[in-house]
Length: 468
Ligand SMILES: Cc1ncc(COP(=O)(O)O)c(C=O)c1O
Image: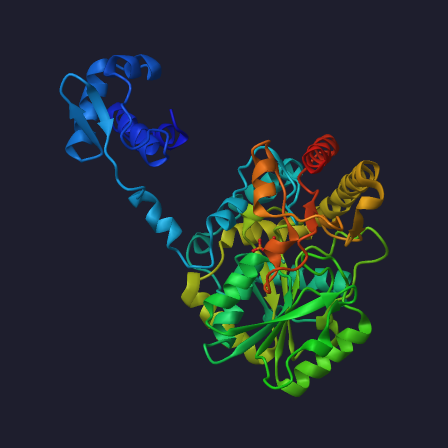
């Protein structure tokens, strides 16, 4: 029986069989005009009584899904391909297609080269459990009520300490706002700073969910190309002043370049001249494999740069905790917006995270994972090199949890991705991340964070077999 029906434990058996059949009707497993199995056969197939199947068939006939033909059986009514259950999903925002929804499905159990995704099986669960328990055991009654919209004070202090140590950022906890991941930080910034008459310049390519956040503000998106030195600052608009410029300077997403110091200076000059805010998304740069972590753009300007960080990569995505460090003038309006959005991020998880960081577990976990991710990255590099030799160029592998594999002369499209998906391998063509379409179609963005070395080897072999 389908997972939809088995998952609904409170449903009666009749309801479960009803849902099961309706899923099959809408899923196209039973086609219009097709004769359904006899009540006896279906009862036997799914292990329920025949009376129950008769009852469900009668219900579906009454509702117009099926029709009974005397002496001949029960048939599927032709609904002209319409599926009222799916309509809600398909119509949510024109830019969110079915593929986008499925690529965000983290329950895919095959070999998933999802970029920028951490190893779920190596999350420090025991230490996290201990930190959470310690917090639960030490709460006062007050801790179970509403909390500060800006975030847990201890956590904001720990974030400042980490940022100073790792990124050279000097900030005060009062400038830190804890959010539901980087996603919410970017959403709140766009909501506050952008309206339909404004513009935002963004690196192109960028993460598709970030592009969708920009689009949701109604502002004009100005795609700005990137190269091996990061954002091509000299291609930012000159006739209009964008309210914001979005960048990932420590590790461009998805191409991995680092914004050079020359470009950083140029970008800050541009932002000052145009009164633009720079949104600096630093999503994964702790995992750097060559040299030291790259310093933040925010280090160079506290007035024009909003720094956005996340615990989705160095801890785990389900935690839904991230933060932003904001210029003084934006503190009050952003806290107010955060309060109006969701009051505050979960207070007990924030307290547990503060303890986890204070006890140095985050630091140890990052160091431990850096060694593991380095091995996975090396395995991917070797497998690509051995399998494709000179047919592949690899870039963007110095940091983070993914790299870029370019196959000159090849074209990766959704058909190819679908063929691999049918073999339980999921790939991510670079073309899906572009704002201006038709570029970088010969490249794959290949995540290795949540794959074992064995899975990486198998995945590359499967891709090679398909490309032969
Ligand atoms: C470019 C980029 N920024 C930020 C994030 C993190 O988002 P969040 O913190 O909401 O999980 C991701 C996640 O994949 C990303 O790709």
